[in-house]
Image (cartoon, rainbow, N blue to C red):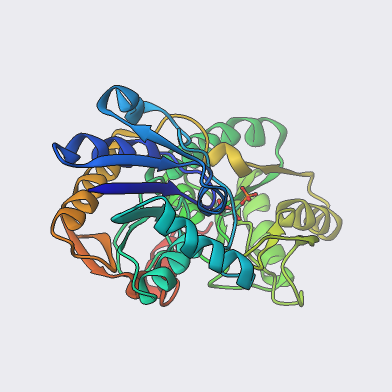
Length: 340
Ligand code: F6P
């Protein structure tokens, strides 16, 4: 049996652990081919054979040995036809697609056309529905919390307001968890907008009392008054997403102007995604990879592996891409206890 694997969308710590898990658990009678640069490699038929030696020790490495890209083969009819043609010409008996909702939505469409596809949910944002966690998230939260820990001493020494921006397009999971872990004094996430006046009230109250403040903000947070999120609207990717970034800087200028307190902004951005995965993400990635291979062996296609509690299960691919998993109000309420 000839099996393709691809990694699509933003890279994410733990991708290599999934690849290793698939290859190592494949066994006799299975040939594994890595497709380079996500769906782009399916359009150019760029593949490499993967044997046990190729995946030796890769689970501790960040990024993906296969490369990745944000390419949507369903955007143009010619690409969709080429994708189908190449799938056949490559002789794949199965394809394992590792990615977030964009990559998995392509996998789901391919599966609905009758192709043997299995999905593995990946994203530091942790917003894929019907799985408790996506790998990469745990690493991103740890990097974010470490950065916020470090900001406390400099903010305190200078009696400043420090605004730290973390990734999170529609879901504020990274920001709320890193903020909670590292004791941010205000957490701003897309799910729960706030007005500038409310933010300013928090700042004035905290600064009078404690003389320094850390605000954690997700890149997708939009103050109520703004019509649109802060972003570079000239850059739109193949899935129609604009490039977010800059809300921390935007807020810093307004807060300094309205409160008079010296304010600085820091954007963590891609730092959250880079580097070696935590042990948790290495293990979750490994378990996902092994289960994806199991599904292929059982010819149980059109499924996505998922984590429920501590159990690895599988669900229909469409369930993973149906909606975004957002931070629920109960969790935000818990974080609010520590707004200070
Ligand atoms: O993969 C998800 C994500 O990290 C988002 O949080 C972020 O908005 C986006 O990717 C950034 O994408 P890019 O690497 O293409 O700039």
